[in-house]
Structures are given as structure tokens and as C-alpha cells.
Image 1 (cartoon, rainbow, N blue to C red):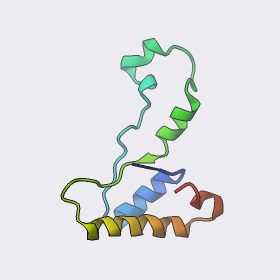
Image 2 (image 1 turned 90 degrees about the vertical axis):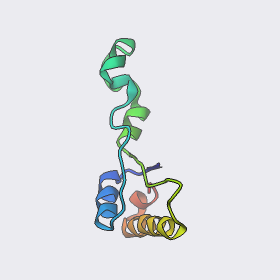
Image 3 (image 1 turned 30 degrees about the vertical axis):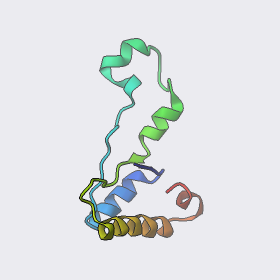
Image 4 (image 1 turned 90 degrees about the horizontal axis):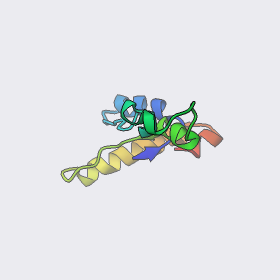
Length: 92
């Protein structure tokens, strides 16, 4: 999993390069229906958690992932980061 303020753009870029990605935690646990009674109040209850939820992206990782594939994924992320301007680049 990586974190970037340009998550949706990175995800689209990776998809265009044939790299799958996922958003496995789209809603923070304290905002899910099953837990709302334990965290009453108005958002943002946990502002950092709520911000990070919109920035995390899961990259492929599994035992059969070859080194060439891993290098390709890393190269794609680097190229995307290199195409971004100053401050945005530092968050990839």
C-alpha cells in the first residue's frame, strides 16, 4: 500500500499501463454503519484518518509476482511521480 494526494490520477495512470491497483479501505472504520454508534458526532471525528483514507492505494503484491513485474510497477510509479510538479511529487 502506498499513500499519495494524487491517488486517483496515479490509479488511472497505472491502469493505462496495465497495472492493477485497489482501494481497500474507502471508508474509515469509524464512519461505517456498524461502528457509528461508538463514534457519535459530526465529521471530521478523526481528521487524519479521514484524509488518509482518500490517499491510500494498494499495489499488486503476491507470492507469484516476478521481479520483472515488480520492477515494472515501481518504474510506473516513479515515472508518474516524476511527471508531477514539486509539492505534489513529494507525496507520491
